[in-house]
Image (cartoon, rainbow, N blue to C red; front, side, top):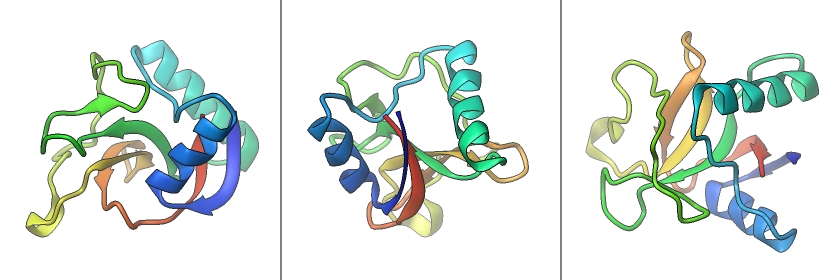
Length: 115
């Protein structure tokens, strides 16, 4: 489910849970491209979107919000990096020139998410 409302990662996850889902978990390159195409179809671009990756429980131990482990990654070069030494426990996709994953701050608001 594609959602177009400005939210933090936590707000986006709560929204998905309200509808019986979680933010999207991505377990393969095929799933990653499927989610990217979903974003592209709705926005005509590969713009930022929240997906379900997080490391809230333990820094640098990434999981999906549905409880599954992060067994596939598509991190942008140099990510995840906790930029400037600040915790970035949330995963956003379509970051930078590579249009890959980035770790982001808990309070960051993004216009789109995928459940």
